Structures are given as structure tokens and as C-alpha cells.
Amino acid sequence: LANKLYLLLFKIKEKLLAVRGNRIWPQTDDKSLLSWNALMNISLTKAGVVLQQKQYLERAAAHMEWMLQAFEQDGGLLHTWKNGHARITAKLDGYAYVVQALLQLASATGNNNFLLKSRDLLEVVSRDFGSEGGFFYFTSVQQQDIPVRKTDLYDGATPSANAVMAHNLWLAGMCFERTEWTEQAWLMMQNMSDSAVRYSYSFSYWGIMAQRYAQGLKTVVISGERAENVVSEMRESYFPESYCLTLRKDIFNIPLLEKKFFDGKLYIFVCTEQACLSPVSSVGEAFSLLRS
Image (cartoon, rainbow, N blue to C red; front, side, top):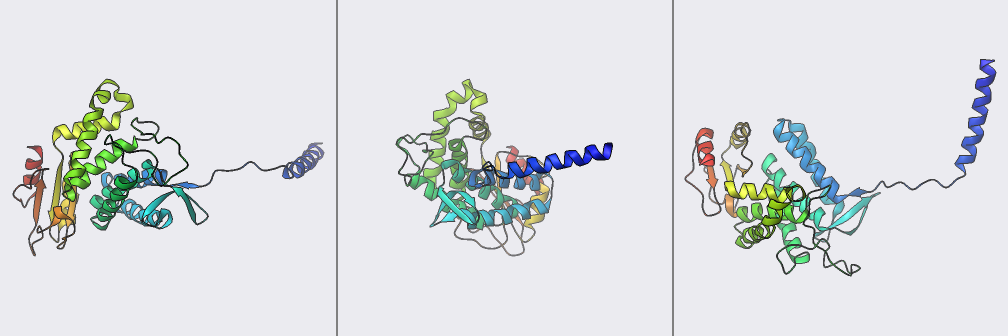
């Protein structure tokens, strides 16, 4: 009896499957988004740094190379990718998260080419997304089918694109000595400070930036052939208001790194927005400068 029942159910399911196979299948959304990929890249980099897992950093670097190859076109970025083709002009969040990912990768891997790429993309954002009030529009000036261009200031399911851009401008402005970028970042933060204090849950990324500004954002340049080992030692302590770069040879197209490499010597430079302090040769001395 059991076998007969099993065969009957099997035949019924076969007939149901044949009928269902003739129906129109529901569409699936299997495209890749630039912004979401960039957020994943940031997560990989942070995990690699915190957990001291080199494979995460290698995966993040390889993923970034793929993103730039897949989504970049004519010096700009596109929004979606599927089956080898990217389309639709990227929105501000895509640019903001990719630039942040590049800045984090440059610090974590010591590959300063990522830093140079972040500068190029920031130039595109300033040209195509800038507004009169100092913030950035969510859509590019190249996108002609948008009747009204809006600005994204609130944190939602993802961080506010303008808040991320302010942080990007601040870091890149210090690295490339672009005072117009650091001044714009400060102006953006000042304009949002009241809202961030009154409605902290909606403006948490602005709050993070304000906190780091209050502590005094610093850049750290570790110069020398053993720079990578020193970076690992420094990361055993947490200084969220510092941004660290390594230097293993002379680099002249990044102003912050100019004339800071000396053969056979290890130096750690701690720099503020105004100037770099006298270099030190030990992690302990660098920590003292960061705390002060």
C-alpha cells in the first residue's frame, strides 16, 4: 500500500511540474551594484586589519581591481553590472563608498596607487556632483533624465553618501594638501552639526566625523624598508582619528609622502592638518604623539 501511494504521489508531482514548467518564470534580480560591492570591499579590508588576516586584504585588493575594471568607463563609474556589461551612470553613494574603499585599501595594503585612484575619482565627484551649498547631489550632472536633483544627508540602511564624502575629502585633502577639500569637509560637517546632535540616530556617520574632528585627525607616515612590520605593531592599538600610510621608496606625486624616505632608516611621521611633527623611530614615541 505504501509503495502504491508513493508511486501515485510521484506521478501527481510529475504532472504538476510539467504544468508549472509552462508558466512564465518570475524575474530574478541578479545584477551587481557598485555601491554594495564597495561596502563589501570596505568590510573585507577592515576584517583583514582587525583580525590580522592577510588573505582578506588580498581578496579586497583583487576585488577592487575587478570593480574598477567592471564598473569604470571613460574615467567615470557606472551603477550596475551584469553578464560582463555595466550601465547607468553611478550615483553619489557608489562613488563615495568606492573612494572610501580605496583610501582604506591604501592604508591597509601599503599600495599607494589606490590612494592616487581615490584622488582621480574625487575630482570626478567634485566636477559632476557638486552643488552650490557645499554638499553633493545624489545624481550626476551627466544624468539628464532626472527633473530634480536631491541631496542625501541622512543615514538609512547605508551611510549617508554626503557624510562619507566629507570624510573622504578630509583624508584625501590632508594626503594631497588640497586645502579646498579639507575646508569643504569642515563646512559640510559644520552645516550638519546641529542636526547630528539633535537626531543622532539619523546622522550617526556625521557624528563619527565630528568626534574625530574634535580629537584632531592625524595622518601617520611610516617610512622605511621595515614599514610593514611597524604598521602591524601600531595596529595592536586603536586610534580611530589617525590615518596610516607606508612608504618603502621615494614617492613625489603624493605631497604627504614627499621627502620622507631615507635609505636604511626607519622614521614615523605624525602629521596634523597644519604640519608634520619631528619624526620618531619607535612605535611608543609615535603613540605618545598621537595621544597628545
